[in-house]
Amino acid sequence: MSGDIIDGKAFAERLRQRVAEAVPQFVETEARAPGLAVVIVGEDPASHVYVRSKGKATVAAGMASFEHRLPDTTSQEELIALVEQLNLDDAVDGILVQLPLPAGIDDKAVIEAIDPAKDVDGFHVANAGRLAVGEEGLVPCTPLGCLMLLKDRLGDLSGLEAVVVGRSNIVGKPMAQLLLQQNCTVTIAHSRTRDLPGVVRRADIVVAAVGRPEMIRGDWLKPGATVIDVGINRIAGEGDRTRLVGDVDFESARQVAGGITPVPGGVGPMTIAVLLRNTLVAACARAGIAPPA
Ligand code: NDP
Image (cartoon, rainbow, N blue to C red; front, top):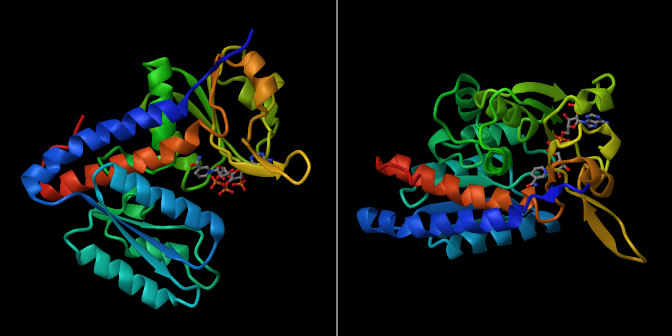
């Protein structure tokens, strides 16, 4: 038996299309496009690649992209001053500060400076709190994308056993909150969890957000489980090459799982698609109009 591959790339493409189709109506009523400002500090090459692709995707969806590239000599005060300026800018509906920030800048202080109504990454403590108490807010893109894939595949998640491996504020914790809202029975596992394979084996749904290459193996899984692999790890490949792998050992897991996301082509493409969706949702909320379904 071999589980199905959950095609995040194709789902993300459809989501981007839906966002792009909804933008003209916003433009018609508001006489401007929804705008996303992305701020990057320093020269981290991977971050520059992410920012470029976010900018391109924003423009492709018919929205306005504002990129702010700052040198790594930028001080925390200067960065926060820029965020405050963007908070007041009516053309900007979403603000994303690309992480990680250079040493010496406190990520938390910068994120807390973002207007929660423009916090399209959903990292502000006000949005994290809203998610925890079940109020409307902006939800972090990666876990929301994982939930969309799960609902698309499984429909009603009510009563399912879900194990989230990883408890970061940007993936693991919001993922657990979203699954709880869907009436899953949720376990959050982490580096101190005892008998991790035994915990994972209980799960109908496994979300792996650990950052350890191919850690979760097929023999840890309950047969038929749905596996969402958030991990992006670069490891040595053939010769001088490197390759990307997830936190799940894809080959062995696929023999046991009912469905599994590949890396690349699973959760990764969902993150940018949900960012566009969040930008449109933030723009509609600021304009006082209903967001698209
Ligand atoms: P963090 O490093 O912030 O968190 C990792 C979590 O995994 C921690 O809670 C940690 O536990 C737990 N952990 C570490 N080692 C083990 C272990 N041996 N057994 C059980 N749990 C363990 O990572 P992120 O949440 O930011 O990211 C996780 C992965 O997802 C990374 O590979 C990252 O690149 C990827 N990612 C992918 C995105 C995408 O768009 N697809 C977006 C964001 C992240 P503890 O808290 O106890 O230390």
